[in-house]
Amino acid sequence: MAKIIVLCCLIILAAFGSVNGSSKKQEVGFYELKKGDISMKFTNWGAAIVSLILPDKHGKLTDIVLGFDSTKEYQTNAPSFGALVGRVANRIGGAQFTLNGTHYKLIANDGNNTLHGGPKGFGHVVWKVKKHSNEGHTPRIVFTYYSVDGDQGFPGALLATVRYALIGNNQLSVTMKAKALNKPTPVNLAQHAYWNLNGHNSGDILSNVIQIFGSQITLLDSHFIPTGKFESVKGTPYDFLKPHPIKSKINGLANGYDINYVLDDGVGHKLKRAAVVHDPKSGRVLELSTNAPGVQFYTSNTLDIKGKGGFEYKPFAALCLETQAFPDSVNHPNFPSTIVSPGKPYKHYMLFKFSTN
Image (cartoon, rainbow, N blue to C red; front, side):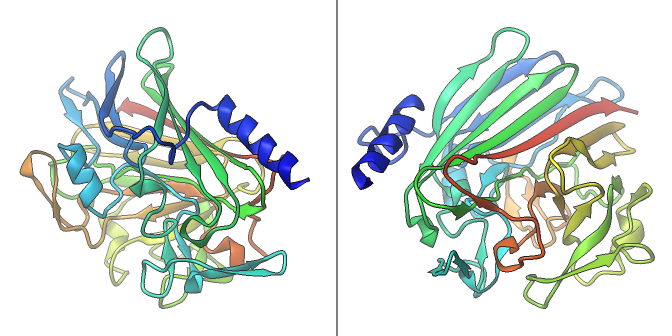
């Protein structure tokens, strides 16, 4: 039986082409997509979004994604700019969990917790470029990553795929998939772009007006780990059920926003709106939809690093909207399950619509 399982895994991997960890060294580079008014760059280090350039309300072209100028900077810096993070995004409390009676100890990289899959999580490895097409109606790039059994402490081999595609009119589609090849394992992939709709080098995002379609948040303890309880956002600084400037509520918090919202009607698999962001200065609007149950709203609270063109990115220089499963779900039976098993693949969709107002 063991030989049959191994053979099946090899057949699956062969269908996806060569995998990371093979004898052929993967080169780290930049890749471009263009359609209409949008042009984007990516790197296979972390399957990351490097830039997204589109016009403002006056037609001026600007890059609205924080990042670096060289692939070396992506490989040697920590913020996960634009990366596809996993195997489990966000935090796992105590860097441990129990699955089917087996206790797993992970590599801690956020105090005693595991953050974004560990120190060598998916945002800090080389992905294979499976497909890159800048032609036709749907310019797209597809990255794959083979994560071995025991990677950062997680059980089972996993094959992850992310597809970025420019579709329709100024829309970016992100499709994340994963297959457990031999064991059940937790999976929670997230896209970690840092957005500043007025331009990556324009200062802070505190004047941005945001609406988040989540009536509850997952409560956190002092170590940013969910308690397992939910709290209504009404009457709190987290209430963005109606559009508000970020600066109008952020003073009610100690350090800024870094919280998971429970999206309304978020347990099913249908695509629903997660958030809308409007930058009054540029007129740019970002509308995000997803099939994930939650979205992490983060305002780059501790950011302090030199980025593109030598510009100094400081706290509140960007916002992140990471659609995801709830943090630490593997330790909270009342949260939607993140366990992926052989024969039951993981699918996670995001749709970004860009416009001006």
